[in-house]
Amino acid sequence: MRNFRTRTLGFTAALLACWLCLSGCALAFGETGELLSPDDLTRLQPAYEKFVNELADLIIARGLLPADQRDAWFRYQMGDYFQNGGYGMIAAMYSPDLLELARPQDSLLRLEKPTPHGTLRIDTLGAYDPLDATLPGLMLEASLTDAQGLPVACRFRWHCEQGGFIAWDSLNAAEVNVGNSFTNDGRICYWTDQPPAPDSGGVWVIDLDILSPTDDAAVLSSASLTLTQQGTGWALDYQALQ
Image (cartoon, rainbow, N blue to C red; front, top):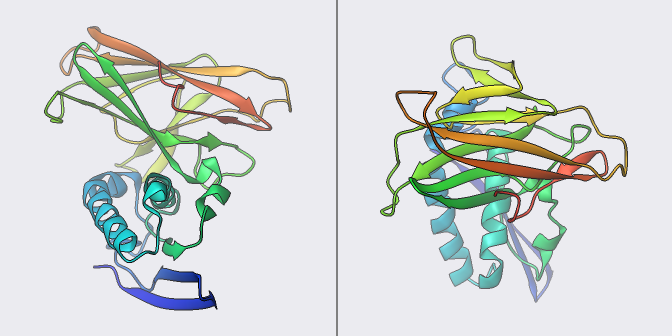
């Protein structure tokens, strides 16, 4: 169970900031005292998202967050969850447009695309810079759901011409390089590359095939994720998934 320490800061009568900080939380550490693995994060993600959504309802009702900033707040909190393994903070504050200061690489980007077999969803981050990142690469998590929102059995094949993929090896409890083509069940993996030359203006493309759950040679549908260079890294937006 999470334990929180709450501090209220009164800068002005119009500004109320409440930081809910973790203090010795079980979520941040596994049974052996280590930080959570990607497998742990994936398993806990549905419950954590439910908690964050319920907290959003509460802080909006209490006037601590403008309703039109809910989505940005949610994405920022989920970005912190994936980058810090649950060992971060939950910020509930009233300060107009404060979330505009959040960097794209710190916020979750949830992309969706309809396919003949269901809705493809990719959870990633709004940007990735190998010179300024807490993760080993750009986070990629894929799922396919039917019209009722239920999971569709399938596998996912990631491929890129530039860079390569990193995956979590549960058996050895380590991150491993898996090359430029990698097949999994959609759980978190990472794409990374060397920092591009500044302002070269290029784009990088990650291709994704949705495969039959029993036959990797049977491609059900395909998609691509376009990364646009931004400084020494890359940026994504809601049109990145095609």
